[in-house]
Image (cartoon, rainbow, N blue to C red; front, side):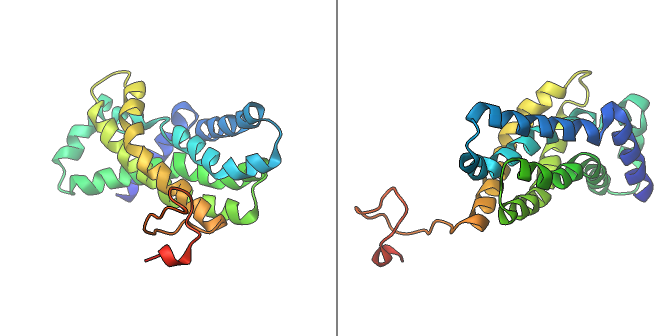
Length: 207
């Protein structure tokens, strides 16, 4: 499993630029946003965690089609299916190698891009931690899409179409967790006529 991890890590770094392509795409997405929303620093700081998460999600989709493609082309995928080691463990190791080469650089680059978005230190730390937890989930979800299109010669776009709807819950929880670390999270309460559907400000309505 260690040899498989190192092999996939080397292949991921060599194919298509590896981590550099994902980081450059991540930086491009974040750099375009200020031109679209304007030079309002307060607005950029508010939407910063969401923009970083969207950029990381889109960058994580790059290269998912090559997760099992190389093994199918050289015939080693059949050997992996016939080996004594559990197939689940093999897929897990390959996903970890792919995340190390593509997802981990995004987490490392997030603080620098957070400064570019005028985010506070707490917001940058919260976003970085949520990316550290959420990007492996995107990789594991992407492995299912990569397995579906492994027989297609050019299945990169199809993998993105299949994986993106399934990764939306990861995006929602990641952004919500980052915002909750910066500001007070919304409380769950019974709907009342004074605050519903706004944020509850009446202590008597809380359960």
